[in-house]
Length: 115
Length: 111
Image (cartoon, rainbow over all chains, first blue to last red; front, side):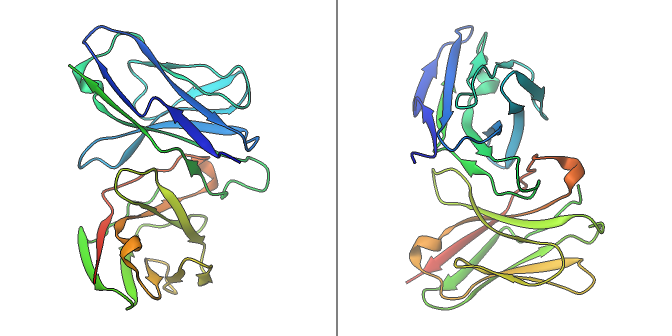
């Protein structure tokens, strides 16, 4: 299994540009989520999904859109990038079956800089 | 979810046990204690979790006090590859799959 994969690893955008961060997992996990990590602030939840066609907002959803058309993929879209969205973005997944305490598996991250 | 307090940094000699403390004095009865770590520039990695009994796996041991207001993560024989930020997280079933990461403890294992 490849686990959780994220592309690209690095990205530089100009203010106002749009882009999509890709996340895929091959473990058939129902739950997937996006976090952003900023210096001194730990990880903050952006959006999450408990299955195909179901998404919900986390702590810091503004400026981001998500969709979940398949179990494997959970892309994160920035419609109009702002410098405040400069961050490291992590995608994570876990199975829902077996209980809520299942460990989450994280991808390697995408480092985004918005100029 | 209960708030956790961890020291910002700790040092440990290679081969020795690393004991990382976490205070969670407002923890409620249905909240679990989780530990994750993040090696520089990588995604967080699950280590262990527990409710009230001590737990051990191939990576670490988790000791939870009887009143559950604090816990300690023990890496029995720390190696240089254990240098990372360690996060103590408290969560319950009502928080769903949400993981709220705080500042964590930067553990540096020295040769």
